[in-house]
Amino acid sequence: MMIFSRQRLVQGISERTGIWAIDDDVKKIITAADTPGLGDSMHRDQQFQAAFRDYIQDVGHRLGIDAFLLVFQYDSPLNSVMSILEGFHKLMDVFEPKNWWNHVILVFTRVDYYPNLKFPPTVLHKKQSISEVLIPSIQKKYSLDQPPKYAFMSSKPRQCSHAKKGMCDCSAILKYHTDQMKTLKSRISAVLVENEGERWRPLCDV
Image 1 (tube, helix red, strand yellow):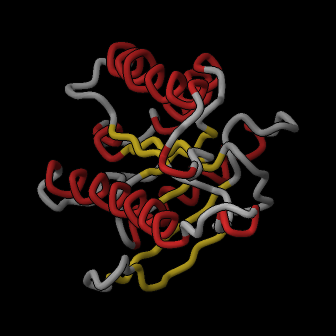
Image 2 (cartoon, rainbow, N blue to C red):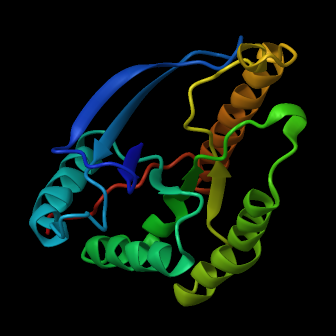
Protein backbone atom coordinates (compact mmCIF):
# COMPACT_ATOMS: atom_id res chain seq x y z
CA MET A 1 0.00 0.00 0.00
CA MET A 2 1.08 3.55 -0.61
CA ILE A 3 -0.17 6.27 1.71
CA PHE A 4 -0.25 9.87 0.49
CA SER A 5 -0.99 12.00 3.54
CA ARG A 6 -2.31 15.54 3.25
CA GLN A 7 -2.43 16.05 7.01
CA ARG A 8 1.18 16.21 7.96
CA LEU A 9 4.55 16.86 6.43
CA VAL A 10 6.64 13.77 5.94
CA GLN A 11 10.24 14.68 5.20
CA GLY A 12 10.89 11.62 3.06
CA ILE A 13 9.38 8.37 1.90
CA SER A 14 9.34 5.71 4.59
CA GLU A 15 8.61 2.04 3.95
CA ARG A 16 7.74 -0.48 6.62
CA THR A 17 6.75 -4.14 6.55
CA GLY A 18 4.76 -5.60 9.42
CA ILE A 19 1.82 -7.72 10.50
CA TRP A 20 -1.72 -6.35 10.27
CA ALA A 21 -4.46 -8.05 12.25
CA ILE A 22 -7.83 -6.78 13.48
CA ASP A 23 -9.36 -8.54 16.48
CA ASP A 24 -8.83 -12.26 15.97
CA ASP A 25 -8.64 -11.87 12.23
CA VAL A 26 -6.09 -13.66 10.09
CA LYS A 27 -2.71 -11.99 10.40
CA LYS A 28 -1.36 -10.60 7.16
CA ILE A 29 2.07 -9.30 6.30
CA ILE A 30 1.80 -5.94 4.57
CA THR A 31 4.24 -3.35 3.31
CA ALA A 32 3.13 0.27 3.65
CA ALA A 33 4.91 3.32 2.31
CA ASP A 34 4.26 6.78 3.75
CA THR A 35 5.03 9.66 1.42
CA PRO A 36 5.09 13.44 1.65
CA GLY A 37 1.59 14.77 1.11
CA LEU A 38 0.50 16.24 -2.18
CA GLY A 39 -0.49 19.86 -1.74
CA ASP A 40 2.51 20.40 0.52
CA SER A 41 2.08 23.43 2.78
CA MET A 42 5.49 24.73 1.69
CA HIS A 43 4.60 24.37 -2.01
CA ARG A 44 7.19 21.68 -2.69
CA ASP A 45 5.07 19.38 -4.84
CA GLN A 46 7.35 19.83 -7.85
CA GLN A 47 10.36 19.06 -5.68
CA PHE A 48 8.77 15.83 -4.44
CA GLN A 49 7.45 14.73 -7.84
CA ALA A 50 10.64 13.09 -9.11
CA ALA A 51 11.10 11.21 -5.82
CA PHE A 52 7.44 10.10 -5.93
CA ARG A 53 7.75 8.70 -9.42
CA ASP A 54 11.08 7.02 -8.77
CA TYR A 55 9.70 5.32 -5.68
CA ILE A 56 6.41 4.31 -7.29
CA GLN A 57 8.39 2.80 -10.14
CA ASP A 58 10.74 1.01 -7.74
CA VAL A 59 8.12 -0.45 -5.39
CA GLY A 60 5.85 -1.23 -8.32
CA HIS A 61 8.55 -3.40 -9.86
CA ARG A 62 9.68 -4.94 -6.54
CA LEU A 63 6.34 -5.72 -4.95
CA GLY A 64 3.45 -4.31 -6.93
CA ILE A 65 0.89 -1.99 -5.31
CA ASP A 66 -2.41 -3.24 -3.92
CA ALA A 67 -3.78 0.19 -3.07
CA PHE A 68 -2.97 3.88 -3.11
CA LEU A 69 -4.43 5.40 0.07
CA LEU A 70 -4.97 9.13 -0.38
CA VAL A 71 -5.47 10.65 3.06
CA PHE A 72 -7.42 13.84 3.81
CA GLN A 73 -8.98 15.44 6.83
CA TYR A 74 -12.71 14.88 6.51
CA ASP A 75 -13.42 18.61 6.78
CA SER A 76 -11.05 19.62 3.98
CA PRO A 77 -12.77 21.90 1.43
CA LEU A 78 -14.00 19.82 -1.50
CA ASN A 79 -12.17 22.02 -4.02
CA SER A 80 -8.95 21.44 -2.09
CA VAL A 81 -9.43 17.67 -2.27
CA MET A 82 -10.13 17.90 -6.01
CA SER A 83 -6.97 19.96 -6.48
CA ILE A 84 -4.87 17.36 -4.65
CA LEU A 85 -6.41 14.58 -6.73
CA GLU A 86 -5.57 16.49 -9.90
CA GLY A 87 -1.96 16.61 -8.72
CA PHE A 88 -2.02 12.87 -8.07
CA HIS A 89 -3.55 12.25 -11.49
CA LYS A 90 -0.79 14.25 -13.20
CA LEU A 91 1.83 12.47 -11.13
CA MET A 92 0.56 9.04 -12.17
CA ASP A 93 -0.44 9.83 -15.74
CA VAL A 94 3.06 9.11 -17.06
CA PHE A 95 2.72 5.46 -16.05
CA GLU A 96 1.28 2.52 -17.93
CA PRO A 97 -1.08 0.80 -17.45
CA LYS A 98 -3.58 3.59 -16.85
CA ASN A 99 -5.74 1.49 -14.52
CA TRP A 100 -4.13 2.81 -11.34
CA TRP A 101 -7.37 4.64 -10.45
CA ASN A 102 -8.83 1.17 -9.84
CA HIS A 103 -6.42 0.89 -6.89
CA VAL A 104 -7.18 4.26 -5.27
CA ILE A 105 -8.92 4.50 -1.89
CA LEU A 106 -9.71 7.85 -0.28
CA VAL A 107 -9.29 7.90 3.49
CA PHE A 108 -10.92 10.71 5.47
CA THR A 109 -9.56 11.14 9.00
CA ARG A 110 -10.71 12.91 12.17
CA VAL A 111 -14.11 11.27 12.06
CA ASP A 112 -13.78 10.61 15.76
CA TYR A 113 -15.95 8.82 18.30
CA TYR A 114 -18.79 10.63 20.03
CA PRO A 115 -20.66 9.11 23.00
CA ASN A 116 -23.59 7.01 21.80
CA LEU A 117 -22.47 7.86 18.25
CA LYS A 118 -24.33 11.16 18.44
CA PHE A 119 -22.30 13.06 15.87
CA PRO A 120 -22.64 16.84 15.56
CA PRO A 121 -24.68 18.02 12.54
CA THR A 122 -21.52 19.50 11.01
CA VAL A 123 -19.85 16.08 10.92
CA LEU A 124 -22.91 14.38 9.47
CA HIS A 125 -23.30 17.09 6.83
CA LYS A 126 -19.65 16.85 5.80
CA LYS A 127 -19.79 13.07 5.50
CA GLN A 128 -22.92 13.38 3.40
CA SER A 129 -21.24 15.98 1.19
CA ILE A 130 -18.31 13.63 0.62
CA SER A 131 -20.61 10.74 -0.29
CA GLU A 132 -23.10 12.65 -2.43
CA VAL A 133 -21.03 15.45 -3.98
CA LEU A 134 -17.29 14.73 -3.88
CA ILE A 135 -17.28 11.04 -4.83
CA PRO A 136 -19.62 11.45 -7.85
CA SER A 137 -17.59 14.50 -8.95
CA ILE A 138 -14.39 12.45 -8.95
CA GLN A 139 -16.01 9.66 -10.93
CA LYS A 140 -17.31 12.12 -13.51
CA LYS A 141 -14.11 14.16 -13.86
CA TYR A 142 -11.88 11.16 -14.43
CA SER A 143 -14.44 9.06 -16.35
CA LEU A 144 -14.18 6.18 -13.89
CA ASP A 145 -16.25 3.06 -14.43
CA GLN A 146 -17.32 3.15 -10.80
CA PRO A 147 -17.05 5.59 -7.88
CA PRO A 148 -13.72 5.53 -6.04
CA LYS A 149 -13.76 3.67 -2.75
CA TYR A 150 -13.45 5.61 0.48
CA ALA A 151 -13.42 5.15 4.23
CA PHE A 152 -13.77 7.32 7.32
CA MET A 153 -11.22 6.95 10.11
CA SER A 154 -10.60 8.40 13.55
CA SER A 155 -7.23 9.97 14.27
CA LYS A 156 -7.92 10.85 17.91
CA PRO A 157 -6.43 8.88 20.82
CA ARG A 158 -9.04 6.84 22.67
CA GLN A 159 -10.32 8.56 25.80
CA CYS A 160 -12.99 7.09 28.03
CA SER A 161 -15.89 9.39 28.93
CA HIS A 162 -15.33 8.33 32.55
CA ALA A 163 -12.33 10.70 32.56
CA LYS A 164 -14.82 13.53 32.06
CA LYS A 165 -17.16 12.22 34.76
CA GLY A 166 -19.33 10.38 32.26
CA MET A 167 -20.21 6.72 31.91
CA CYS A 168 -17.40 4.38 30.93
CA ASP A 169 -17.56 3.76 27.18
CA CYS A 170 -14.20 2.06 26.61
CA SER A 171 -15.85 -0.92 24.94
CA ALA A 172 -17.89 1.31 22.63
CA ILE A 173 -14.81 3.33 21.66
CA LEU A 174 -12.82 0.17 20.96
CA LYS A 175 -15.64 -1.20 18.82
CA TYR A 176 -15.87 2.10 16.90
CA HIS A 177 -12.16 2.10 16.07
CA THR A 178 -12.17 -1.60 15.25
CA ASP A 179 -15.17 -1.24 12.94
CA GLN A 180 -13.41 1.59 11.10
CA MET A 181 -10.33 -0.57 10.58
CA LYS A 182 -12.51 -3.42 9.35
CA THR A 183 -14.16 -1.06 6.88
CA LEU A 184 -10.78 0.07 5.55
CA LYS A 185 -9.63 -3.52 5.25
CA SER A 186 -12.82 -4.43 3.39
CA ARG A 187 -12.19 -1.59 0.92
CA ILE A 188 -8.69 -2.88 0.25
CA SER A 189 -10.02 -6.43 -0.14
CA ALA A 190 -12.65 -5.17 -2.60
CA VAL A 191 -9.92 -3.50 -4.66
CA LEU A 192 -8.03 -6.80 -4.80
CA VAL A 193 -11.13 -8.76 -5.81
CA GLU A 194 -12.11 -6.29 -8.53
CA ASN A 195 -8.58 -6.40 -9.93
CA GLU A 196 -8.62 -10.21 -9.81
CA GLY A 197 -5.89 -10.24 -7.20
CA GLU A 198 -3.50 -8.38 -9.47
CA ARG A 199 -1.36 -5.66 -7.95
CA TRP A 200 -0.70 -2.55 -9.99
CA ARG A 201 2.75 -2.67 -11.60
CA PRO A 202 4.28 -0.18 -14.04
CA LEU A 203 4.90 -1.77 -17.43
CA CYS A 204 8.05 0.21 -18.17
CA ASP A 205 10.35 2.83 -16.69
CA VAL A 206 9.55 6.53 -17.10
